[in-house]
Image (cartoon, rainbow, N blue to C red; front, side, top):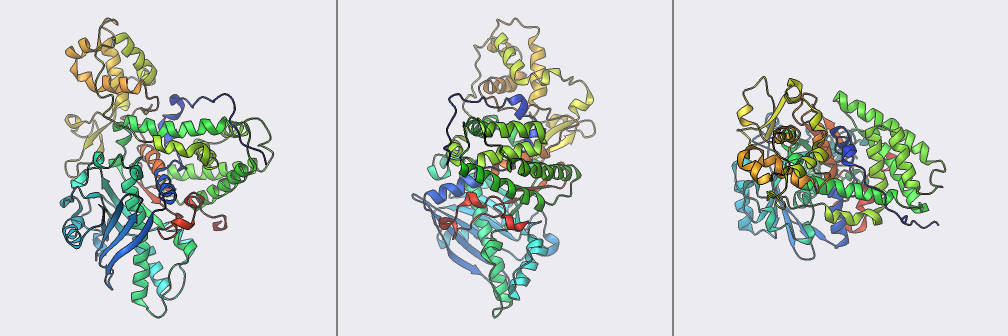
Length: 565
């Protein structure tokens, strides 16, 4: 067996000018560094234990249940409330006011008094308030037809039809998972340094994983209620094919603009992992076999992916063709050369679409856990660091930063209507970001600073009449309106992947690319855009359940099994 060794020299990371374009970011796929997988890997390594202390669900599927996650130092408990929701009140929209189930993640083990308190607040969601003892607030609705299909099959003693499961992939979908201080939840600073929650969105994703367990327990419970004598439980392999759905809209899109340091941390970890793999001097037989297996299973995932939106449907068709070409390519002697993984990446870059290229990046990481898994610890950031503006910097130095980071924007004429067609604002009703039409709606007074490209170009033009030797402080004393973009530029100078290098207010903006990028880092496996502004995804499809984690490898389950084809 060949050993896999690092080459003496290190390959350079792919440049931001290539990676930070929305068309490519909107083609990212989940990987070993995605946050769901990081969470499951950590809990397995630390030997977490799980149980269900409370199941107070009646014959109509209404009541309360609790799920404990018991780690080496602390316990976290999902408190789940199941409701009787009329069909005409069920909605994917964030503005809904009633849900099939509502949840909170309690920091510790709740008492009966805590559960009583939460029963009055959690079902109200935004209209209620939780406390610093809770880390998340969330809700979910049933996928009605599939939910009923599964209950009916199990009640009759039958397993549901896998062909009906795969295109949907979930029995409940969340419409919001709030955390980090929202609606009274514990502020992130109070738990961010806990080793078991280190990284991004770990409490929220622990909540979703436990919600998945509750959903499957609920459907089996309702089948037993309907037909106690004949009901069966789901077969384990089939049970794991159910994830948790999520409907995500524009509220999430500006996150990448508002968190430049975090965006850099995410992208930098991914690109560093890719560079490490490409620098390997040889490919072991084990890594070759793993790559071929995951590549074949990625094709199964692409074949199971059902899309209605025409733009994304075309991208998925191209991805399927790319994966066919990839699978055929790696059956040949492609690894019998120096730096075989680099050669494979360069083949993909020259041959495949952006979707296919970025799928190959994920597959390269997939086959090299020992080389990349440690990078998960770097995927967090303190956005307050670097907030102070360096007033002593010369304007000449600032202009050079603007050229390096925002050079793409300096070529855009922002006086042209198509380049400023859109604007971002915050909805008064839901306090969520929205995207408006600048010339059709009276929204200009409410515009949010979510166009760093335009603002950088405006700043660059304003600096033309100033002596390059003057200080930033002197300039800002006269032009305080540029403070926010000066701060961004100075911060981005040391964080090459901090800025999206596309116009975020132009007529050609496709917001779904921003959502897709973020959700790929979460670990979503299928993306189903319903417009250019909102998307349905599946989370944890194929992953082990709490009672299975100790005996199973969650990374091996991240792609569907080959027999699904």
